[in-house]
Image (cartoon, rainbow, N blue to C red; front, side):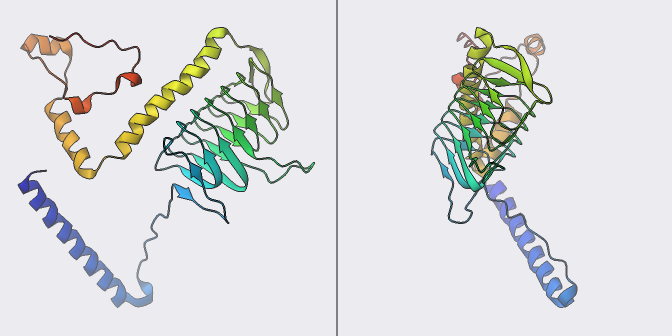
Length: 272
């Protein structure tokens, strides 16, 4: 931001401050009839009772997610936008390298009808798809829970087990290693192939890499974001055929290049 930009920003800031001061004065003059704005009190991490979330420094938790109470998140795991992990009446454990995708809900049960304590335990390198619901269940290492699936109290998904998208897994169901279950209620569909088992592991790795990019983006300051906007406008790329017709060669600035591990199959372009 140049000198002129800073000056304009400062003028705008003081105009807004003056407007807010006038608004507050008007509210006081109106007495009991003034409008009170309810501000969002969202907190990404929140204590409950004496329980405090314990999140590894290398984990990514999106700013719009909610991690509440007795929740542990391991190294390299990612909790995506809109997720809620609520460990209030019991504990939630998320292992290393696991991804819980956007708008998913993880909760616990104090106990079931038989008196069994039901925390939620999610192992290492697990993928939990968008908008899934996990309640008082156990998902072992390198398992896969599809988008919109619901796992009820006492469910156990063994290592390399897969729950299909939209499935409803009833209470106390055990999904054995290497099987795909789906439907409502969920039933055995078929065995996983070797390629699908490899995909589960690769999916976890991909999300771990992608989380690093999102973490870096969320850590940027206002000035860095505005600077990148200017760069993107200046170096906006058009269709390659269009560029060749104009004889234009466009070079992407280093600030806009994604890390190689985000696009592992993308081969680098040879230098001119």
